[in-house]
Length: 250
Image (tube, rainbow, N blue to C red; front, side, top):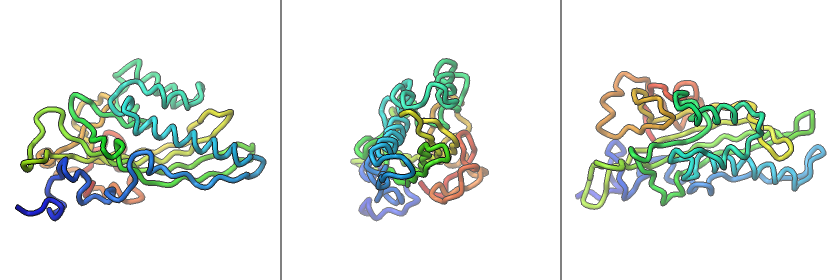
């Protein structure tokens, strides 16, 4: 049998080598991939103030995309606590968990899967992660942080997973790209702008606030969907939550 590491990229990945053929294979595991820029005193803010603010943004990204509580659908208390009570994103998320009929709205800010449908392979810290963070001081003397990160999840079906070889079950990968401009004020985060792109999410599934990965046998339903490279820089509009797109790779 051909060694699994040498399989063509078109063949399904398995639990043995879940990121085989993926650009994300070389990325950091989970929070290790969210690297912070060097902090320094700037325009009236001390080094400690800048460092603390950058750390808060990093912790928010972790709580929103890598925490098992959030990823498996519980109310993301940790992520919400970083946001200012008056922030529209916090109010929107509170509403989403009060009224599930709000559909995919929470996916603009959170990565969530239905535990009854899929399990995230957590050996990689929940996801492979890469991106950048920059910052500047506003005319009002507040820190504005620009975060641009991609999270790649490897998932296996909770039940009925297809066994590809004697030791491995089929894996589907989902790519979540988030771009956020966040103002830090009095230790709380205020989201100024945000854009999210999700690749390999079944747009025909119920709008229940979860990402529904497509596995190999599901790809036939995507033949007429627009093809998108989730690792390209400009794709956010094409693959926003709920969009019908077929990723060229994951």
